[in-house]
Amino acid sequence: MAVREFSAKEVLQELKKLYHPPRSFLKWDTPFELLVATVLSAQCTDERVNKVTKTLFSTYSRPQDFLDLPRRELEFLIHSCGTFRVKARYLQEISREIVERCGGKVPGTMEELLRLPGVGRKTAAIILYAAFGKVEGIAVDTHVFRLARRLGFSRGRTAEQVERDLMRQFPQKEWGRINALFISHGRAVCTARNRKCGECVFRKRCPSSMVMGRGDLAEIP
Ligand code: SF4
Image (cartoon, rainbow, N blue to C red; front, side, top):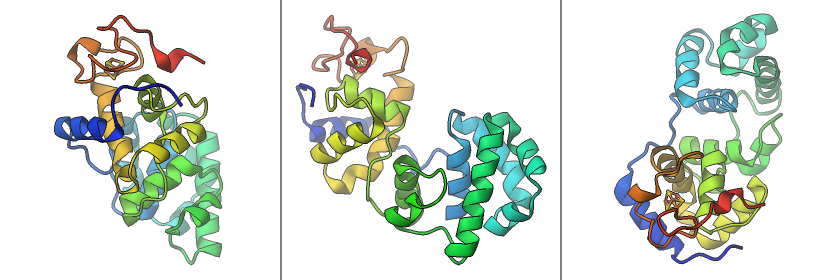
């Protein structure tokens, strides 16, 4: 674990003052729609996903719809989200599992979600918190990964290691919020390139603060 100068509580307090993010930046009405949107969001912006799903969900919004849809057609509909062949395959495999094994409903536990094809802890944690109000993990995406390392909460090299470090230091009741709060700060101030340390509330004590002449801990292997 990395050295840091402030507590998880202090970081949460500051981020909560700054941001009031939604539970999910993706637009959805049902757990299945959230699952589809989350799969599409891999290496794609939320804005692009929301644009694609607006059209997609107007006609296809249930697992059976995705099973009935010819693969080529699904690929065409989600094409602009990138890696569309892989995503189309996963979406149909997930839909098949949900229809055949889960009674047509997205399961509401980490264990069952992880059994769905292509669903990892990040996706499962997002679904559980946003759609079911459960906190069983912390969704570590690129922003959470970067911020956790820059702020000194983790030296982990994988999302799993960073999640474990964060889960040790942050109270469980806050796990669900960390994703949206870290994403908000990661997008607005602590960006991957050209971070704006001069405008950051953590600038005086952050172990990666450029204001204090420090290097970027996120880049240290
Ligand atoms: S001080 Fe800089 S590196 Fe640290 S959290 Fe703020 S923007 Fe990120």
